[in-house]
Image (cartoon, rainbow, N blue to C red; front, side):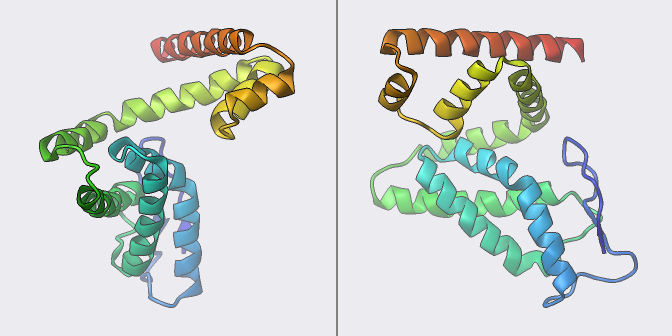
Length: 195
């Protein structure tokens, strides 16, 4: 079995059976699943996090989504896009997480939650295009700016640690972050307008 390249919008088939089927216990099946999950982990996390307000809840839901996908992978039709199929599992895990949160007193109204899920699905292609543009714009930043963005937003380094590490004031740090965010915003919009 091969893992075929997926399109940017996840609309192409991602695995081909070549005459055989995905069989439980088959090491090829497990390898394909691992590759697909790794390829789409960020997309799944962004989808889940857009519906759950707390990052830890989203991480837990992603883990449960991965387990559910593993258990049902024999039912996956390789002729269909994996990501769309996986979003169905993610949605169910988000519902379970919301149910748990409701018991703890933290929850969105049901109609608002459903609206968010529908709207997120409608804008998937646009969100993917913006993310691709962001990745390209990040590469275009000067190394020091790129590193600052990485430290603050990827590693989630606390502001006080960055102030100390860079030997600057909080005010200067916030101005630099604001300048870089504006630069990225303008770059993203230019790239999207050019396509």
